[in-house]
Image 1 (cartoon, rainbow, N blue to C red):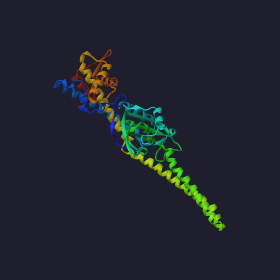
Image 2: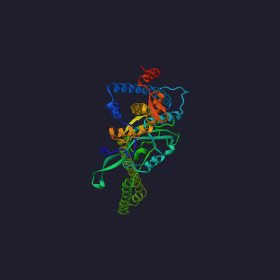
Image 3: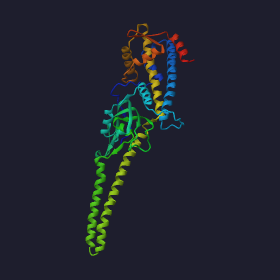
Image 4: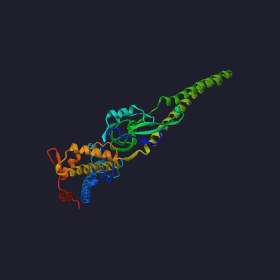
Length: 396
């Protein structure tokens, strides 16, 4: 039985996600503490303006995405018109873009198939019928190694540690086909969205519909061997009884043709019940493990992802703008922004972040806060552009 997490190691690869709040973000700005009070005040006001613009943009996007997802939401209680479309392609297009903004990475088919081939962190082997899916997308973020503990009977239940590769966040989006094996509680008319936390790489497939538990040889042996031995022992006892009562021919006849089949049927039923109990035990362990890992479902996933994407955009735009502002009329290129931002983030939050400035630079240019000359970026007068942005975006 796996116990709670007792230690976290550093992520194996660089992540794009910046896990800091607004106040901590200011500490990630190189030499921000050396700015004058008036400069700090002016910068904070401009950062708030960036936040307001992003919030307004993402609110509009939320309304649009919810509208196109509503006919495909399995939890929706809104009455729909016959004309409401159930085309899922637009939903998946929007979702993939939002996931990219929230710095999630798409998991390949090979990674999913590898998870299926391996036992889960809970010691379960599963099988997945991928033919059930019309479309399937799995995205992860926060790839790290965690240290878990377990107790094994062959080590006299002594607690031991083992490393597990884990995704801090995992999002699954899928639409099912009309299929004979389609679970009764699910429909091909909807797009299902699920988000989880702390999911081991080897457990990815346990979150998919149509997944079935595969018994280990040990558990099969626990069921089959007692059943077979019980049948053999019963036959031996019955034969002895037959010999003892041969003087009663009619009784022997009844025992021969009725008791032996009844005993065999009894042990078959007993073995089946034992199989079901073992299977239920596995399923209960899996359910207990995932109960606290589930974050959101369906429209709740969209709201969470939009929120995450908005704040990722904000963090990247604030860091990028500040560095361009800091260099002023000397100019700075995207590669230099990468280098400085990653170094400062490493110093501040002790994580190797793969900072991508290109997207933030493009958004700041569209906002009217920066201009590009050759390969270098320059800030525009902050007070002037702030008024222009407020007027254009309708922000007081």
